[in-house]
Image (tube, rainbow, N blue to C red):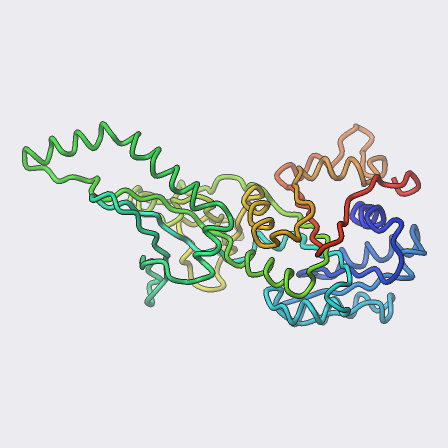
Length: 361
């Protein structure tokens, strides 16, 4: 309902086909609820609406198509990858200049990232490395960063500047320990500060997605809702050595969690788990996404901001319908670790946000 009211606000005063493209529609619940709401509360909007889902899972794509049959041929489910501009163009269904709303709800937290390490040698030379997983034991190895998408993601997300600052801060913090190590080396000890490093996971797949949107739907309004934080991993079962050598000691590290044979959650100190045995979830770095969106869209970017979900819901959702008798409102209070990014691009016409009509509040 809240997303529907927001779309109605944005589309107010515009005529013609209203296109909505959802990325990763899950079981189709959001699409079904939004279309049902539009049919009942904004019939004129519903009449000119087309709704497409780009779904990478074939079983889910089939389920979505079955659940949405009540809305007829205004719904299309495209089995494909959201980083593929051809799949987005098929879902869009119009010419590139035709505007579309692009929705991504709890999608980016599952988009794969790449780990990079910024290293400073004893000679003071800066080197950027990328992590790869090799061998039957899923061993992490580092190599010079050469992958074009990784290099672009580090730059366009602003994380390269962050890593450089981390490295400078670490050098300052380790000044006395370096001195101690050097003194130890004089008396036969071994220095542990030969190389300074700092690491981060960068949103490479999210960058590929934004590039696909730029290519297939350059005139768009993006709505991206996701987790901005996760509870700390419970690694109390790990040995000190496992914690010390954990490849998750990096910025934007994911939460890696599975269920054991007793149905209990178990968090892991590494992302290099056996394929399919654990969920790997990244909290979205929304400031980095804003930076990355503006860099990717360039001069076509018109607006880009993010807010806590609460601010959006208080403006667009029906708070009375979700408030309990005690005053507790789960819509606002159960998801305090979520944010929403709203952005728009259009070459060259603008697509500014308007005040929501009172009839849709």
